[in-house]
Length: 500
Ligand SMILES: C[S@@+](CC[C@H](N)C(=O)[O-])C[C@H]1O[C@@H](n2cnc3c(N)ncnc32)[C@H](O)[C@@H]1O
Image 1 (cartoon, protein in one colour):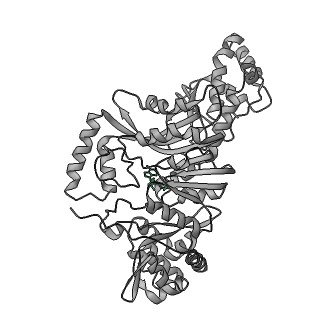
Image 2 (cartoon, rainbow, N blue to C red; image 1 turned 90 degrees about the vertical axis):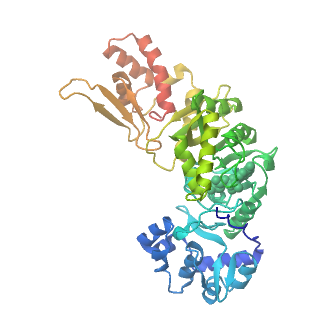
Image 3 (cartoon, rainbow, N blue to C red; image 1 turned 180 degrees about the horizontal axis):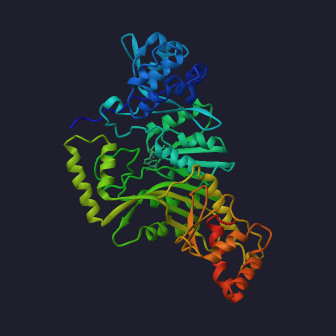
């Protein structure tokens, strides 16, 4: 079995070195857009597949931008003189600080400094180097710090981005969520168990001129007694026996989905009134318990409104292969032993599948919190953050309204809502009617003719009660029966976003 890489060297940059590095990266235009233009689409896609050769052919002109891209993104050595120019005359200082390593008249990067951004910002993210470039060995040290991943982006697009005073980024890692938080939060606190991640998250913040408070510690322990308006986390959620080698970026060391349960049950006491907690999570499907019941059991005691959305469920074998491959074990003798042991543990625990999904909790302060737990494996339209926030507002609306208030409300169907009717050719009535939303989770629901007519008529002119009464006349149904039947449906339609 090949050994994992030795633990990386300490990273220790002084304030003035960080400032000069920022100035150099800015001067070189080391941004997502400029690097994309330099590489072109083919080399860029190849790099996303961990192949550096096409990109190397486009970064040989010695310009600061090409040098930085080669040094960090391609992990190729560059000559000291070019590195010195690109890094603002700091090649030697940054070598001493653990960012670079010198080899003769060349230097190579020991950590990744990666351009990153959203629509309004250009940032840099500091993390450990991506393993496995050009088919190289993929194994990493136990304290390896993950860079921006698909999971990071998934959480970032889910996050409710209301301007607020404070936010916690639990398991901050390279600090990517904190960067996003800095665009709408006054005070950002990050926490991580891994001291190396704490160093990198601090450096990410400082390099971007941000003053984030990054603390070392286990889960919520570093913020004991504190409350926030927003708590986001992409925790180490990999579901395993918790007995083998632990990679801190993905393994909590706790068995099963215990880490997610601890976060979700612990979060409510760290939320200000109205605050959100958003978690990227895995949970088990056990033979003796529907997953919905399990997740509800975590959510209900905290007293928050909560929306759990399962995006995918995978069988144990698929799950184990995914994470063994992620650990770089494919092709090693360890593969079969660990695969077998992991499956045995799944069997003993009666785990039949693992769900991947999103949890959004809101401290709504309701006597009877609203829990929405559902599977939605279909395409969604990112970002979902605005839709999660809108869900919270709609729950306020329906939960706070009496039946009379719902009947008196002038509700409006969602913009872009479509009706799809399916039936036999020539039939007077469709056999199936589906209402489909155009955005967010692109929710769809089957409707009967009364529900479809109700939604169709609600354009703000008439109140719900007036439309229901008209439909009672049209369908020759008793008014009170129709109201009793369709008032809960109206509440559902609001909850799900069909009516606003
Ligand atoms: C999947 S990474 C997420 C990194 C980053 N927040 C993102 O969104 O990409 C999980 C992070 O949780 C940290 N972590 C692991 N165990 C932890 C614990 N018990 N308490 C706090 N953080 C922990 C890891 O060091 C790692 O940085």
